[in-house]
Length: 184
Length: 326
Image (cartoon, rainbow over all chains, first blue to last red; front, side):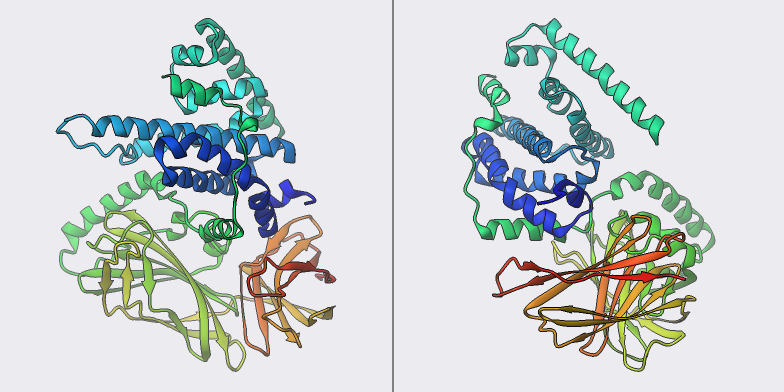
């Protein structure tokens, strides 16, 4: 489709049809791979719905071509699915203890928690500005909120390597934002 | 944490794609297009809460038993985000009404309204102890005198535990052409939480008159011919609120061909259609108000042909029309 990205950003319905047709198998595959066996079909479906909703609502923030879009959509899906996986696992663990205090696992009740969730979502969309190699690192740290130790363990690198890359990445992000603001 | 590490290290390009049926794709598209409301109310909660608290404190002291003369909510338009607001310039042109009615312990108040000659939009607030959820529905439409039915769209957002902001846009099907002064009445009858089926009923009743906004008519008098028939474009009606395209269809089979319309001005701004009304004789499609510095408009129909009811629709070529604004 010509100018798919432009049209998607303008909320063109045909671009929406095209996007769903082209990317749903890819994104559904990711959700199912991460969530179906561990958390069930419904969790996978909810995650996919959430991903598409987020992309559709935030498309106007995206900059890049169709190839970038595919990677962007794929990464968002992977991390939203992992986030969902972790929440489900935590909830299962909570339910299996005999704790008398009822906690339904939702952290969205307080205003603070909701605002925090919103800024985490925003972060999800700014990070694509980073070079590819750093994107997942940032998502692990700032979206999933893993510790530097957990990240080092997952990636098989040292904690100081994680810290270095985060530091350099943050400087790049700030730099990118400053440049953008000057042109407005 | 081994499972988590495995997931983190997954290369998404190596995951096999999943099978997706046409039905699933349609459902997804429908789900996304139905999303008109987003829970942005939470951002405004902090501000809204403080206004509400101040207002209710004064109410308790000064007016204990009378429907408060202090408005339930002010600047109601600010509780709706860009996607819900049909008209960006609503606040600038709306007439303040400040009509209040109480029934069944709950108060409804219309803040302001506007009529552009084609449609009516009002903002209102509801104060009630009933919990109607984040996005209640209002039943009972706006009625315009001299109209043979209408289409309308309603958005309601919860602002606090006892306050809801609402906006209604209604486009009447006028029998004798659109009047300069329009009599409107509104009897909401009930508000409900669609999810829990909680319903609040009442006898609220409002009657008011609205003056049409000044409008400029730009004659078009051009035809768009395509394989399925003809659209005869009559005129554009420009007001500070909106742009309305008035046209007739000739010989077009509505089950076969569906058109969506878009305007583009010479500055590169694009105006998608907000809503449309019509009868077999005349159609009116409403768009956002034009940029004040635009000097010409391209009217683009995007027509789709449906061979069968269930189809996605195949785009059909149709010419655009360029209109110069004086």
